[in-house]
Length: 113
Image (cartoon, rainbow, N blue to C red; front, top):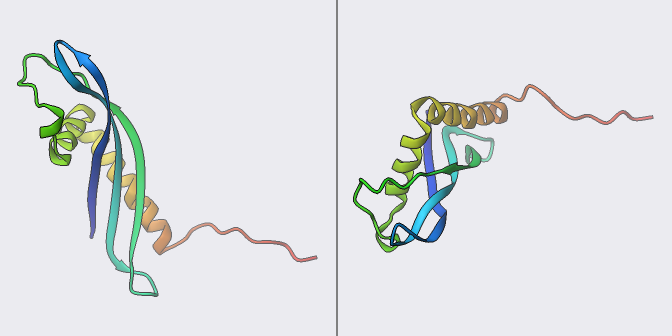
């Protein structure tokens, strides 16, 4: 089983928008998967995928000041904006990378003359 960790701590902000300061408009996310399968050195296989997600500020929702934001809050915004299908696709991509580490299907070889 793989455990996924979402890091959504790095954001781009509008310095001022709708009379609010530091309004998040873009999230630079990183998803890391850590497998319960261990490599020959007893280290879990891991893989990471990175990307960005635009976030639209909704003035109908209560504004959360930048100093009160947490990774959990911004991850929730990011995943809600993406939708379940895209979140699942990202985590599946991470799993695929881990699977390729566990059981490689390609290799690079050099021909010896």
